[in-house]
Length: 182
Image (cartoon, rainbow, N blue to C red; front, side):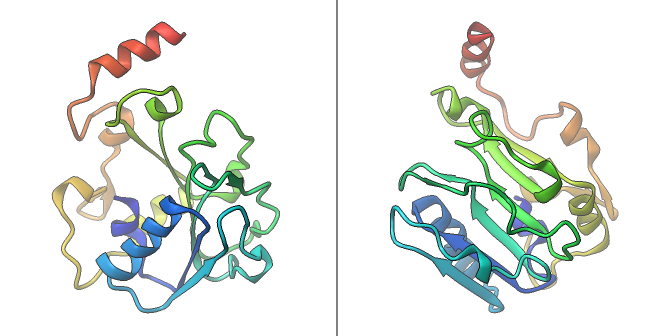
């Protein structure tokens, strides 16, 4: 959802070293059809050289903790505070287990129920003010944007999505599992 709405304004570096990150790369290249994409990969069990990432000028996409490879990004020291691009991260298995420096990430996705071992259905999205600015100031050209992926209306963030309005019907079994875990 976030990639479809925000990626394409500038070059993008996609980091992957496991299957989920590779899926993000495939989406950027094959589904979005972007051409100014830098693929940074490493073998399973290894991280790519993070010093090669142009996190100052490019948008960057990475998986914070690659559960299929057992490799996690140890920190966000490689991301500058004064960056121009957005930093997208899939934090599904990192969200409750790792310290995330929120000043260094702009778009964070995760599924709270997956962390708790529940069924799929509850994708969460955390946006920095910089990400909201991108949504409100830039629109992808030449790309169909399904209604379910739209985060803005008339150039403004649809804030109801972030105040409890649901896009899909939530699984009440997952919600009950969550309540039981508390």
